[in-house]
Length: 469
Ligand code: NAD
Ligand code: UGA
Image (cartoon, rainbow, N blue to C red; front, side, top):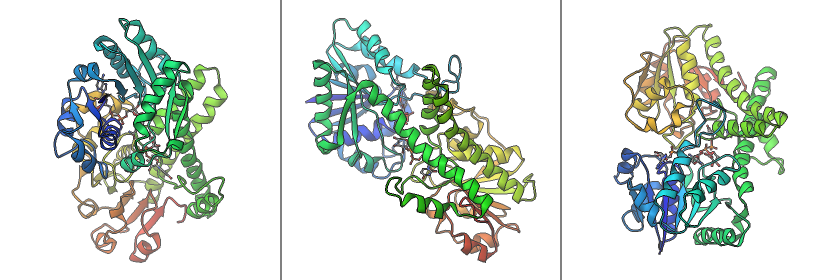
């Protein structure tokens, strides 16, 4: 029986390994983490992450060929294949702070693998890492290897949150990069044999290590670049009377461009797009390519501009002040169908409104009050360090309250901001909401969720992201 161990039981490690266990009954999978609360949750009925379909997959395999444990060293020692899926946050201090990837967690995992191993292993980079990381990892592993042979593979993950299980069941592609040596090819084949148990052969791509590492950063940069392009257009639409939804539909009809990922929004968020693009910018700078770095930096700049523009629109529409006004924020997660708030645009929008002294009442179907308060009191880039998996500090933002539903959040509010495209926000009783709000009642739709015309008929003043006033 092939034994797999995955270091890091997060948004990637958990779902990815659960699907491998489900699809490969003859493989034993152990997912390990240093966070005791996380592992306890994986072993309970309340999984640590909300992801449609995940509960079902975990229930089918847990205790059979899928195990969650804090005994990191034991499972690493016993494994034939070790996936490393730890966080690779943006550095907060030192060389490259604010841009470069912090590989502290990765390096400590690699050192531990080298220390505890007593047999040959394939070590798989699942985390998103800077190109050439495998070279550094190889040095760490072989330096301490006591004659044990390690093969490093790059197998970046392309799942998106909210659709992780679907994406893992039917991936567009699985990418495996390895050394172009007989041992490297054999390791690539061993990993391919796992995926080919459910992924069609033609969707499993094999490349050299550096291409696999860079393809991951490139894919995220291309995706984010589309959003910044359409968001840049939304500003021009607002200035000219064009409708960005119509523009992106027309543009996406070109088969060379395609319709996906062209929804304008209050800005992209999530644990990866901002971090990975900053990392790409840093790599370009380090390789003496300032023009290329500047090109990708613009993707982030437009994203920041879009969030600022949204806050400015709210304040200017509400007669240039939101001081002491109640603003209901509907949606705090960075996208629908997840409870994940990492780098959510809602943080910047709320901080902007708080800065203008608004009172904010937030409702999100999947995000807890504790998480919201933590996000609003945390410094940028601190969110992706395991410290934040520990209990939170007692600091809270007094201007912020958290409501149990959209009706409570909007009661007596002067304005509503929609920041996540949860389906339930489309179906709210907006007549009832209007009755219970202060007048004039504003709606700022950062996700093009509501039927603006219908709301205007009720009496709302509506600003949508599509540029139509
Ligand atoms: P996460 O923070 O949810 O999970 C990482 C886990 O690793 C944490 O639970 C942490 O406690 C654990 N960890 C850190 N150091 C450890 C160590 N030395 N030993 C054992 N456990 C350790 O992160 P994530 O969202 O799963 O992302 C992991 C990686 O995958 C990142 O590089 C990210 O860029 C990449 N990625 C994420 C997504 C996504 O949708 N979240 C998608 C594709 C790729
Ligand atoms: C993204 C990629 O889609 C995954 O392929 C990748 O594996 C992952 O990053 C990663 O490396 O972590 P994710 O961040 O989970 O996945 O979610 P997306 O669906 O890509 O959305 C990212 C952000 O862009 C969200 O805030 C979303 O609301 C926003 N978005 C997305 C738009 O504003 N417009 C769009 O058209 C699409």
